[in-house]
Image (cartoon, rainbow, N blue to C red; front, side):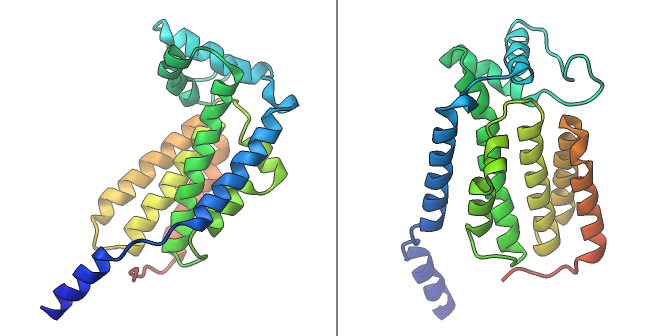
Length: 212
């Protein structure tokens, strides 16, 4: 009875305002607004191909690999297909896919660091979303494969921590989800192979523990 009452009191308590998330998000958005109001707003040749691939896919011609290469996936272009039907074609829309991938990836990485007790909540998010100037610039680059690859790696890390830290929660399912996400990231770009290998190495070296 007493335990149930304590749990009920905890669930009824208002959650604190995530000021760290709000501040980090605001700073990151402001940095990207400044960048996109200058030369960063224009698309280079590789970025423009993302829009071309989306237009081609909207007519039923889907290319799963970047044309002229034997690697680099095209997920950003596929996500762009329904959005361009609603908002039309624009450089900002093409770039926004990468920025949203970076934003979501930052949230997943923050969840990983909190679950592994490596940093307080929203610290990793703020660092990844706002630091450094070079990374902020990369997060607005619409070359297909990189933003989606980063997001998929982040999801793979997060799913792996769910399997390792919370071992009572369908560990095999979370490990499978981690493998699928990391495999899809490698499809997006072979540069993420190292990140996938890091998870495999961590599986051997990190001692599992239950979260509080």
